Length: 131
Image (cartoon, rainbow, N blue to C red; front, side, top):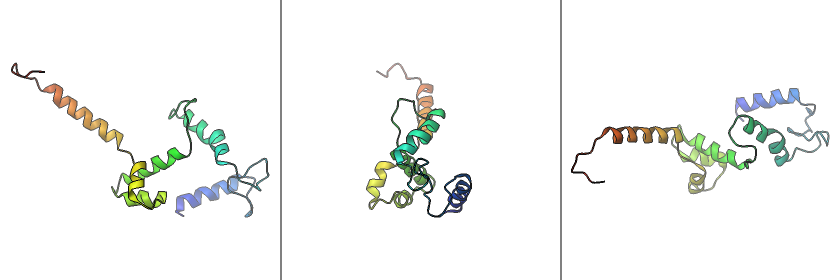
């Protein structure tokens, strides 16, 4: 576990009433720490409202945990350009599967599109060019 995750979990343990070793990290308040919160409950009650508040998705738009796998794969593959980093994090057996989860760099793609259009529009075709 990396230091940042360990620090987050230590901080969380100091905030939660379920801080005993036998309690779950994200414990169900209804079950007094004896069972974890369901993933869908965490998503519905905490994650999706935060994502909606940030304006990343609309209130009626579907949003689930699976989106994080796509984001993680794209983000982890960006700096090193080594798909095996994403493959390891997502625990895929084959890089071909990880490639499905890894998306392009949209800011760079938009910049390339802008540059292309600027050059295209700066070029004035001669009268012999047919469109």
